[in-house]
Length: 147
Image 1: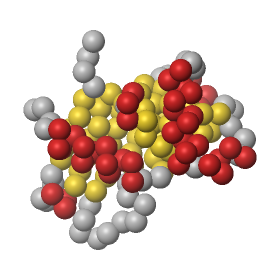
Image 2: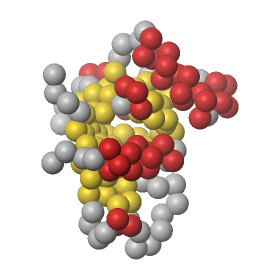
Image 3: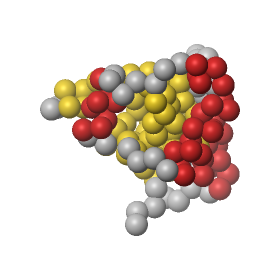
Image 4: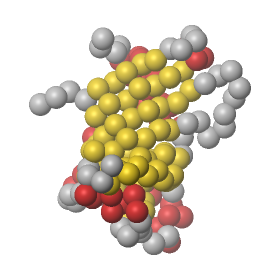
């Protein structure tokens, strides 16, 4: 079922308001998860984060670009469950899109310029937004158009 523009905006607005994503990777069938500060680059549907290239989650994402994760509110409220589950492709190429992503990340976290690490992106392919404030168990699902 196709989302309305208003429903889709609810997803992006929620993501923009949050600061931490949980990134799940796998290598040889063994899962791993890491938490990272992130920003949303909406034009290209990217989650942008900074991490060291020698960290386990980056090494695993470089060997298997299919990743998943979740985003929860920075402050949880009992009875008002909201959150995102996502799937995406870990991006390894640079260029103009990476420059746009870096600008978005450093605008949200200017102090991060002083922290070592590299900027990475996840191209979103699937997002499930659960928001009980819209009705118990209400879920909005966004999927990237397949080319």
